[in-house]
Image 1 (cartoon, rainbow, N blue to C red):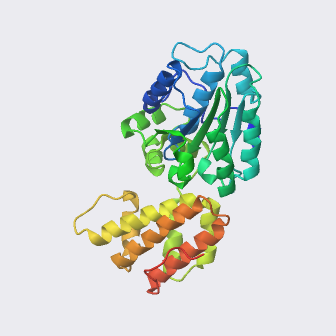
Image 2 (cartoon, helix red, strand yellow):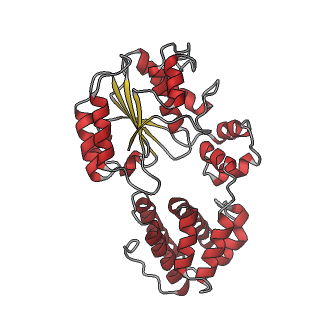
Image 3 (cartoon, rainbow, N blue to C red):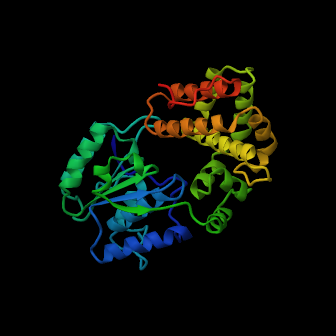
Length: 349
């Protein structure tokens, strides 16, 4: 659905400064803005949790603010800023998928109608598509028409964790701004300075170096999912747990995240099996558990299983049934551990 932009959440609260790793991208956007070189479509691309949504919101607010600060950021006090904070600005819209589902064509058609209207405040009209890679093929085709015929002073902001899943025709019509995982020192310094944060280094590691993902985990009261995941893998391998039941538990933790952690553990098992000398692991605190799991798994089969997991990770971005996807992954793991694993083919559908 198309919505008025929502109120800021705890991850995008307005602050006096932009996180240090976003300062250079912000400066580039401001240079384009002041030079009247902003594109009609901008793709913010990078891993989840690095601040793409914050940067998108900062740009949208700055364009709509009637009294921007000297650094180009929104003032936070004018009528436009108050409307944005209330989630009621008529010229700012956001389209995002319902959790676990794709963005339907109806949402993009509604967004096109919004952009076709004149600005109610005589300035920019901005549409922001979150998780743009979740658009269906029909939705992406509908968006192409807007990209090919942009209206005056309209800006389409596409935010994507997986821009490779977007059609090439969409990517080629957007200016891309890459936002990678920030330098660890910058991310750790910023995370340590946030309220309610303890064990910042541990949570940053668990989040793969993505500071906003780490902060979200901390503030949501999340627990480390890896010990339970290792227990599930060990039980399935030993025939003590049904792969379907383990898949259900993984789905409850989140399909994409579970696949990410299983992949991380399998990569560590490959390192342990292939390297004679002590080797750095992604999960060093789980070394003993991973060594036990890896002991009965031939490296060749682990490599092929990792290929399956990579394919499953791509499918998790658009899968309509996460449970079935994870069932295939856990059944394949059981087969690997018991010697019945096939080294050809992808995740079975």
